[in-house]
Image (cartoon, rainbow, N blue to C red; front, side, top):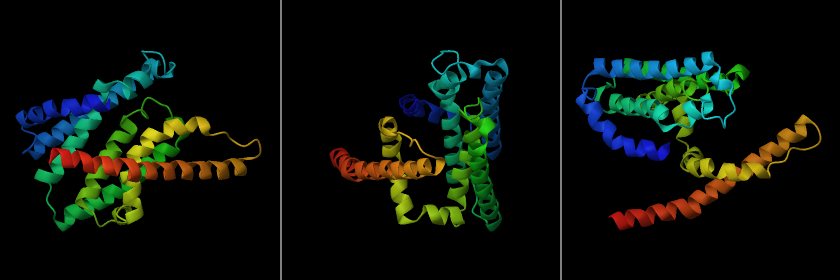
Length: 226
């Protein structure tokens, strides 16, 4: 999915430009609505048809089509591109706009947490994409436009920035660490304590990988390119 989207970017930029989305607020809003509607339609189809209940290994399952198939993840990528266009070329920085996006940032964060906490949403057709794609797009745009909110100030702290930089290492490393997790035979409190320790160790390893491997590799690559 990632490689496909990186390669598609060079084709999507001229397409977005040709459609006049780069300079028109109306066309940008229309593009956001079309892409969001397509993501919603796909989720509804898999939910209603029952295909989301199939095994994840089944080629016809919702997991396979909505989460793992590159072409259906284009919507996420396009929403990110549209958000960047809005922030860089269209949005004003008036006090009213900043205030509205500050409110939208908080609401998007709350909606994301709500969806993560809803048992009915876990592994649903909506959870594979649409339930988080739109709130995430609103959150990123909101934090860019209104960067003085409490959320932005917290995420701007040095430890949070380091965790953000190490998040890709965490994304790659955690799948290797999961088989090492073994719950305790005792009660829930013990399991929660062990899980907290396990999570902290995985995060610490990810930060170590970022500092010891990713940062030096990035410097070498930049030196070679320069």
